[in-house]
Length: 143
Length: 143
DNA sequence: AGTCCGGTGGGGAAAAGTGGGGGAGAGTGG
DNA sequence: CCACTCTCCCCCACTTTTCCCCACCGGACT
Image (cartoon, rainbow over all chains, first blue to last red):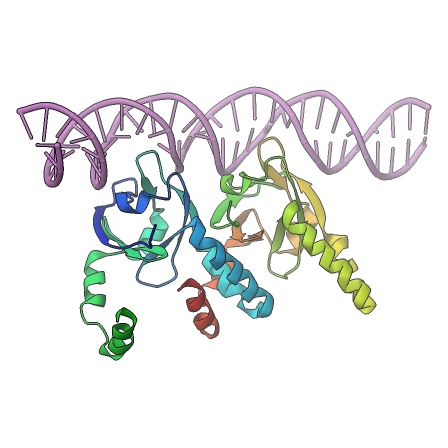
């Protein structure tokens, strides 16, 4: 299948679960994901296939720059391997939800090789005014 | 499965045992680990599969740089092969706990190919302010 | 209007984390 | 070679958390 596309407005229930949008489930049946906070304003969800090369590159970075150990350890410590339950839902631990500033409404956003989880309001404010500096590059890609 | 991820706040009981977090047990059923102190501020726990290449590289280093012998001997002398008991717990000898500065509360941290055991407070102080020098590298890995 | 499918909500069984008693085995000294 | 001690690990027990399962609801397509 092609990369993840689209955005879906879903609820996080009292137990901290949200339903993975049906289009994102196809091709990842009963597969595991890696849930991690890379950016301050969102959570990222990597399917196993996308995560593997990331992991390999992280280990390569540690080998070449041992001083990066603490930075990477902080990332992996706050990451988590998650599985969809039989209803296709994913559990976000409360600590993660709070740290990423997410409430009980989230926007599940397709980002090609991964999925991002945003606060809907914040997502609007971050994307409604795109930087025109990149327009020519983007234009040429789509030409 | 993918590498070790996540952090878990566990107790070390009066006998010096701590429960290996359930996610870290999967895939290593009744496997043995190597417990070793590589860094000053934490203990490292290598599953057998991750330990093998480390051992090979240590032997290779001794052959090429015999002067490193004493340093490596110091490491292997204080390392230890450990097994989980039937309850999935691992015993840390008191000497090791003291040398690594661990109390009766520990943070079990996933670090991809290995597991690290930290004092919770110390871990927070070492990782809460990541070095921005590595941000560009890390950004590009997760892009 | 009925049926299917995707999203939402909660009860309850199973597992995870924690604590401690006691027997088997290794190490030590007589 | 025996007796004593100490450590380790198995077993049992209890509490909390996790997640599996069932049920409901609403919209879309037939």
